[in-house]
Image 1: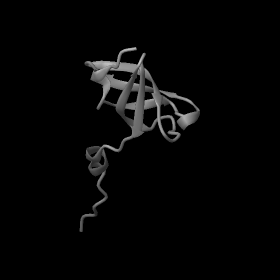
Image 2: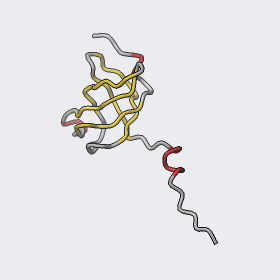
Image 3: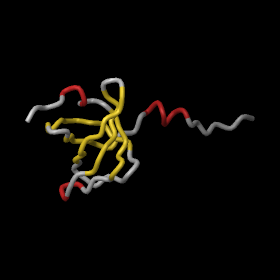
Image 4: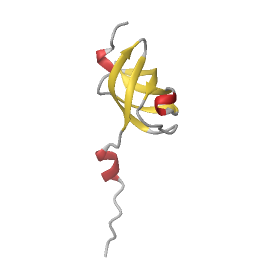
Length: 83
């Protein structure tokens, strides 16, 4: 079983939510100039559609993920009022 170092540090979106220790979900990760799917494991359950960061590769197209909030995306939707 070989780790996939290229996927560590990449972001993705869960297409099937994770169940924490009870089982994996599935994540679509932007990697190698395209998108690939992996089984996604997380410490806590994460919902379908959640943005995630890959923190480890388990090999055999399985990764560990954490919930991820892109600070650039969050700051783009400002709520400032003029005047």
